[in-house]
Amino acid sequence: MKSEIVVDLSKPESPSNPYPMIKPNDVVYIGPRGTQVFDKQLGSIIPIASLLSSLALVFTVLTR
Image (cartoon, rainbow, N blue to C red; front, side, top):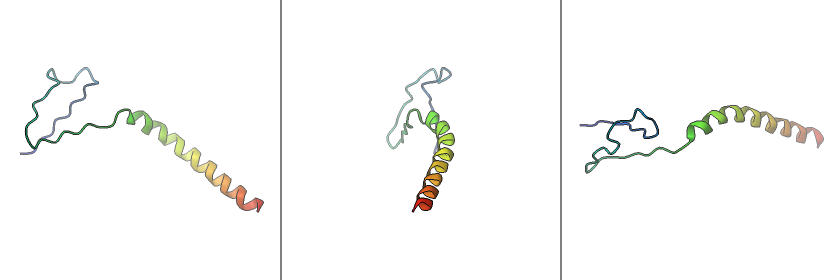
């Protein structure tokens, strides 16, 4: 039987027992820290970087 338990220890509403019982063959995944902030910033950085890259390419082609 497969089940999934998500425990976010950074939130106050996490379970009262922050140490769940881990049994043989259980898979424990620990996600990367701080990716949410980076993902939000990346959404605004990519279009600007793409525009600057395109402008640099056009400038390079026109000046040759």
